[in-house]
Length: 165
Image 1 (cartoon, rainbow, N blue to C red):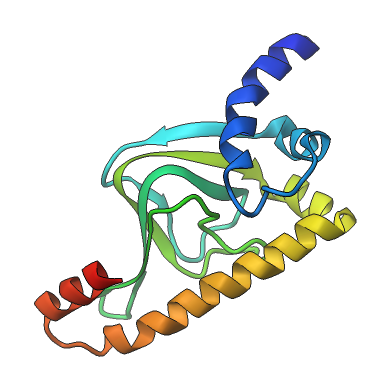
Image 2: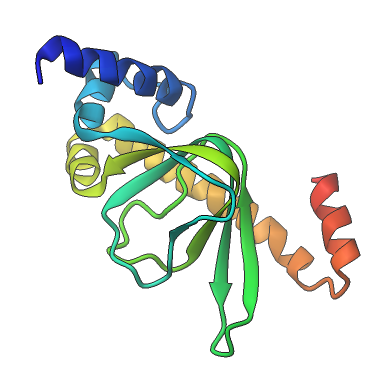
């Protein structure tokens, strides 16, 4: 593939990722380096993106749509842990296996960045490393704020509380 063909494939991903806070303050050359082997895939409502304990090959970045993060207990009962509907990364950056599962809630576009490339670049970029720490901290804070809602025993209350947030 020629450099101009690579450039044309990279432009849509570059413009989408520029709007995501994880990448917002990176130089264009840094983003291009990260995106060299990346792609955007479309997923249909109901598709499973990944399952707990599967090996991590990509960093998933939600561009458009929504994704449910969930866990299954030993009896196979599902617990919804998080609804992701904003432009952010879906999975943990430094885990080798998924700790949770993810399902597409509506037709979505997701950027797939090879995790080994991303980790290698993060080790050499202080800006990206700081962005990862900031975004992980924000994600953890949001999850902690949702904990009281998990105790609500009525599904109508859960929906109402979610809508209020």
